[in-house]
Image (cartoon, rainbow, N blue to C red; front, side):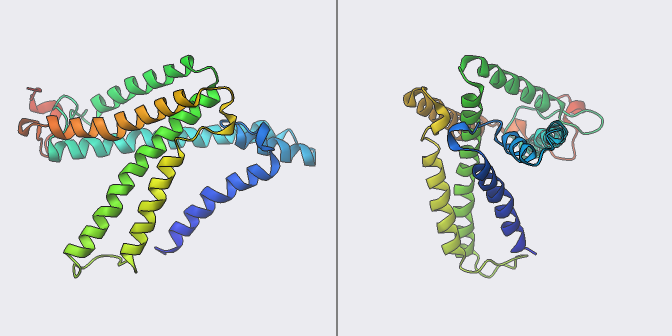
Amino acid sequence: MVLAFPRLVLLILILPPLVISWFIPAEELSLTAGVMQAFEAVFAHFGIQFLTPIVGLAIVTASLAGFMTWLSGPSRSLLLVSQEGGYLPPWFQRTNPNGVQINILAAQGVVTTILALLFAFVPAVSDAYWMFMTITTSVYLLMYLWLFRAAMNLRKRQPDHPRGYRAPALNLLCLLGLVSSLAAILISFVPPSQFGDGSPVVFVAIVGGGILLLGVIVPFLLVRLRKPSWHVAPSTTPSTSGEEAS
């Protein structure tokens, strides 16, 4: 079961883009609407174009469901990490009577709105979408670099510690993961062919600046500026504790 899950992930992430590339020529492929382009081409071939808006509505519905997960999951994790390590002021750690991290969600909404407004400063929405997705993926990969390195350290320092699953050839797997993640980060600086007449220098500057800000500067500041007074026990409700950021 453990080994089958990564294979399923690979099938889900690799096969759909390949299918899209088979149906849509590269010069006509949109970075944001590629999925709908593929459905439209297939349905037109079989004369059932009326299914295109139905599938589009289904994709939007699924995207909204995924959006709710992406909205609540990371903010909840940030709340728990902040309570245990004191990485955020108590104001951000406040919750409502149902335990929802309301202030973190509000801050997340403000930041997301500002990022969404940046679409207005990019000539093509497709280009802006691609750059934001590239920055997000690269920041995730930076985290995986640390995870692979940590796994190697744990195997070296605690080789006999009982674990739920023991990966064979762990060091080799981690090295492959490190090299693959680093290669993907480097590739993210290459503008796609659909970038059109956009300046490669601008593309690299935006992507590099986003990765540096979100993947390096912000985590460094969270660690550097944390205070012991910001530590809140997970069982404590920050909204009723009366603590304020010092």
